[in-house]
Amino acid sequence: METPAAIRIRDLEKVYAAAGNAPAKHALKGVSFDVPQGQIFGLLGPNGAGKSTLINILAGLVRKTSGSAEIWGFDIDADSRNAKRSIGIVPQEIVFDPFFTPLEVLENQAGLYGVPKAARRSLELLGQVHLSDKANAYARTLSGGMKRRLLIAKALVHTPPVIVLDEPTAGVDVELRRQLWELVGELNAGGVTVVLTTHYLEEAEQLCDRIAIINHGQLIANKPTRELVDMAREKVVVLTFDSGVPELPSSPAFLKCERAGERTIEITYDKDRSNAGEVLALVQGQGFRIIDVTTREADLEDVFVHLTSQAAA
Ligand code: ADP
Ligand code: MG
Image (tube, rainbow, N blue to C red; front, top):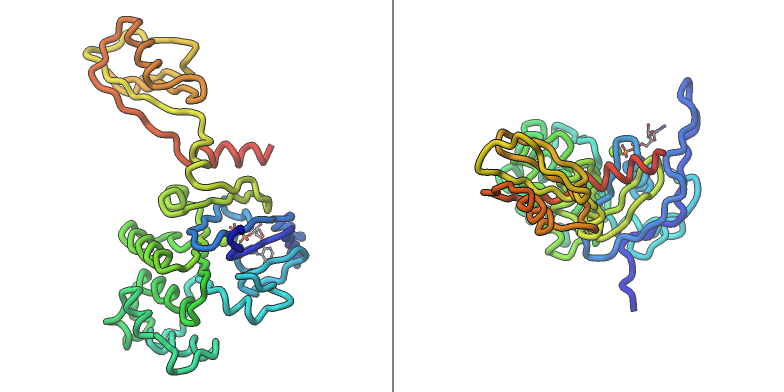
């Protein structure tokens, strides 16, 4: 039997009503997809695509216009209490009362969720997000990175099977991003299903098992990461020659051939119609002496640009 979904979304619509000068906004236009259990699932899309709207509907912060959503099998309307208990949400914005300590933040949150004192694991969670030594510091004294990690711990106090992180690494530095990726990996290894939204494609490509892309409120892709990246048809070989190239090689098999340096050129080809071996043979056949070869994989960015420009047309 198929594993049940961690999250199941069907025909989800959201229209924000007009307010003042702002016209009504159709932010989600019938979105349907499943997040399989146990995965790291990436929800990608440009700014304004509708990612936070979708997350906030799951969190119970935004009212959907129509459609349905289930979290761990619990309908967010019919069984909202269980649905809420099954998910932890790390919001896009950092908000804390500056006068609480990390330990108090977690204890308060556990209280909100009705976690009995004996079942609380605030210190353990602080350890998990590497904040043990800050347990009793004021929240206002924490760095931005520490606050983000505290938010993650806060989302975990009721031990939900699913955690959602909305743009966890927007505007954070490289070191903290690395730490957050590691933490997400550890959580997932511990059995938690992770959903993250991001507009960093590299992040999604490295971290996620599966990726859905939304654009203008519509789902335009939903595939295992590898398959999605493989949709990029173009590949590039970079060739270095033993001397300068007065004239570039040419062939109908090349989509593009460009200079990349005095003795270096880049040839782009369609991976469904050609391959690096054939490209090399064609170039050598035209009398060029190649001394070095590297290939550049197409990446998610290529696919993303392709898909989002297509959908806009
Ligand atoms: P994302 O998180 O992908 O950047 P959002 O879900 O925040 O996108 O926004 C989707 C669209 O809905 C945007 O056009 C945004 O301006 C609009 N929007 C978001 N929140 C509100 C709101 N509270 N009222 C009106 N429009 C909103
Ligand atoms: Mg957002």
